[in-house]
Length: 281
Image 1 (cartoon, rainbow, N blue to C red):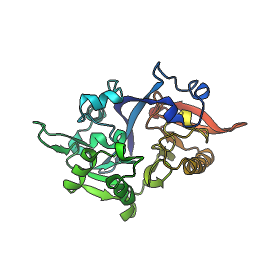
Image 2 (image 1 turned 45 degrees about the vertical axis):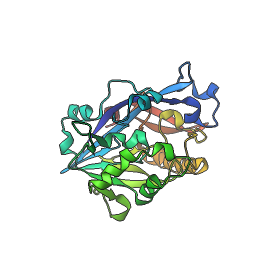
Image 3 (image 1 turned 90 degrees about the vertical axis):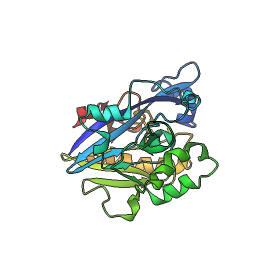
């Protein structure tokens, strides 16, 4: 098995929304904000090469929305989903599985693109199975008012129309024996995290349960979460496991660090070490 960090670019979100009830005087020491109170966040994806499977976890926001939409989120950076995969030594046609942690636009948008003449949408990874949880799919296609604006039909429906939609909860070991899905419902209904057994280590794709190292303290929960108290419980369980088993936590949104490990301090479970994925493997 080989793991590759995939750079799908950066975008900006309001710092207050990203840290919920935590005062700015505290979180800005960890993630600085600009003059508009916006912070830069990565759209970091993970590519897993395991035997004859090449599995891509999340796809960033893509580029098919118009300039006005892109402008709302200040898309920036040199990152590009497909080019980053090519830099790792693979082509889009070689991806066998696309695993969406969830269907918010910044995690699934890159899975669908315009065709050459921009007359219809097509899948970015034509030979891949696209995976999500069945209950999460139902939410995304019948959204509540709180999340409706982030579930975009053009990101979602082409997958079903192409016949390449699959539900991970309907299969035993959908991603093989080395990649285990773990579901959480604090951020959104049945979000998929992954525990990846790699060279006697466990790498955990944290999705938006812990989007960055700055969100390690239990109260540091995003204002976007539909069930913040449940997020805290899910974080607590995962962090305790990470402490006991020395997990490597992989972040989708941390602006600088791919991963971290944790240790116990007088303030609770906190950062031990952070850096690039290659630093931990």
